[in-house]
Length: 397
Ligand SMILES: *Cc1c(COP(=O)(O)O)cnc(C)c1O
Image 1 (cartoon, rainbow, N blue to C red):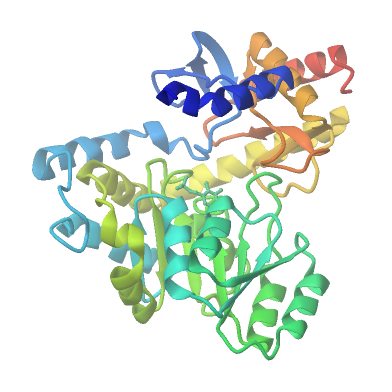
Image 2: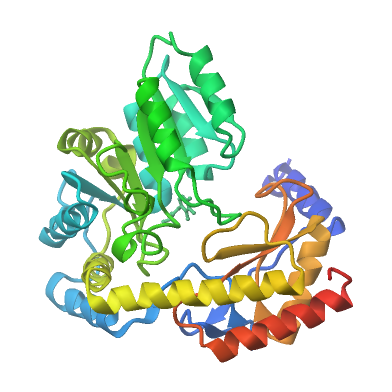
């Protein structure tokens, strides 16, 4: 059999997706990730990026990136544990630890590997993970890699969570209670104070994935732990450098021992090359900005845009689910309908990505909107007008 025949099944699977109208072509961005940007050759109001504060194109960050290229080159040349730990890598980690008010920090290549690498490293066979049903894929994959037993509680359901913790009270191994801080598809916030209490009552390690809260919630964007005043009660805080921070990467904050251990056992730290200097310098500039009055101003603008946009969507009669953050879904039901809504919106000048099964439940397909601090009011008004018009055409409203 030829090699092509061996992969025929992939072709068949793709044909099936096309028949079900679930096949999606990648939208291609020309130029910078801006609030109004050119995708597939068309200028659209961009409601699909995680660039909450507009930092992907911020002058100070660009300047830091190019300066680092001059002083440190374009690549790190090795994994962290061999020759790939640069002075600026350590400086960024110290800066983030100070910012988050924790003993120590380690930066990974992405938020995805920060989660997966951490969960895999700290747990093993015989241990237990108690996880929210809507936690991010990287947490699920980390759990699988760890070989720990996994128990899932219904989304934000504290009663169900406690039932599981009671049932497993005499579990011999270690226990990890883990939640996203802000849930990426619904934009709702985890009930962190109650979860911390449960973790304490049932002797669990407490871990929060704050990818969508970094740069968004808490003072200067310090995340959900700061938002709820839970300092010292969460053992492991994960954040991303790829969303509001505007660059790429993930970090873990916690005790010195935790971070030391991850530097010896987290596989992405040991087996994958560290960030190029430009990425690290970009993040240093981003945290300096977040920690300044200019950063505060950006976060304030993000929230005033968020409140304006949400209020108007609700007034139009859209189902925005349980969202409490700049991530605002418009739930329409079937995946095919969500995809059609998104395609028609795009033609009219609004880019809002549709999301269907398996990323969200089968009957909860949606388009997802994210406003940023850099959207002008006029642009949001125009987006709302287009959303209303297209939704009426498609009988969504
Ligand atoms: C985006 C996201 C990640 C992954 O972060 P990257 O830096 O993009 O790899 C992890 N967890 C959650 C909840 C996310 O939304």
